[in-house]
Length: 331
Ligand code: PBG
Image (cartoon, rainbow, N blue to C red):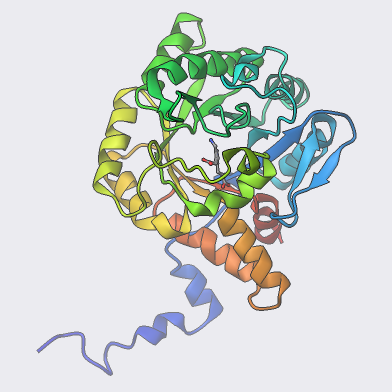
C-alpha cells in the first residue's frame, strides 16, 4: 500500500494561501534574466511601427537610445540589435562588415552613452542579401557554408571593433564559431564573447521578424531548411551544442522558445553551460493578437510563458516583451 494516501496526503494544503504558494514556488523570473531585441534603422528621429509585431518599432539610433535608457531604468541588463537595411543589399552581404554600417554605428553610439549595457549583435547575412538568405548562394540558390563563414568572420570582427560584448551568430553555418573565435583572438578581442544560436530550428514562427527586417519579400517562397534544424529532431541538438561548445561558444541558444522547452531542458542538463532561449517574433505576436481580441490576458499569459522558460532551466530569455515583463515584475 502506498504511504501517499488520501486524506493524509492532500496536495492542496501547500496551495492554501498566497503566502504558502509564494513560499513554495520553485522558479521565478527576474528582470536580470531578460534580453531586449530591438530593430534599428538609418535616419534620425524615426520610429516605424512593425505591423506584424504590435508594440514593436524600428528605431533610428537616437530613438533607440531613449528605449535603452528605459531598459536601464527598469533594470534590464542586455539588448540585442537587429538592423533593417533598405538599400545597401547585394548578393554577398558586403554591407554587413562596413565599419561605418548601421549596426557598427549603433553599437558605438550606445556604448558611448551607456557603457554598462550588454550588447549582443546578430551575425548573419539575411538583412544584407538581396535574396534574404543568411549566407552567400550559388547558382542553384544553395547557401554555401565555407564561403559564408569568411564573411561572417569579417562581420563579427567589425562588431567586436565597434564594442559589442557578444557576437551572436544566428546563421547556422558549420564551423563558424571556431572561425570567429580564432579571428577575435588574433585581433586581441579575447573578451568579446560568442553567443551561438547553436540550436536554431527552421521555424515558421520567425515570420513577423522577417517582415520587420524586410527579408520576407526577398526570401519569397524560399526556406532555410538546408541550414536550420528540422523541428522534429532533438538528437541533432546534442551534436550541434557539443560542437559549438568545443568551438568555444560562451553561451548557446535554443530557438524558438515555447514549443522547444524539452530542448532547452536537455541542453542545460547535459552541457551545464549558459543557455539562452529566444521567445521569437511569432510567439510574441500570437500573444499580442489574442489579447487584442480579448481572448487571453496578455500580462498573465506573458508571465506564465516566462516562468515556463525558467522551469525548463533557461538562463537568459530573449523577448520582445522584455519591457512589459520588467514592468510587471517591478510593480
Ligand atoms: C536571422 C534571424 C532570424 C531571427 C533572428 N535572426 C530569422 C530567420 O532565421 O529567418 C528570428 C527572430 C524572431 O523571429 O524573433 N538570421
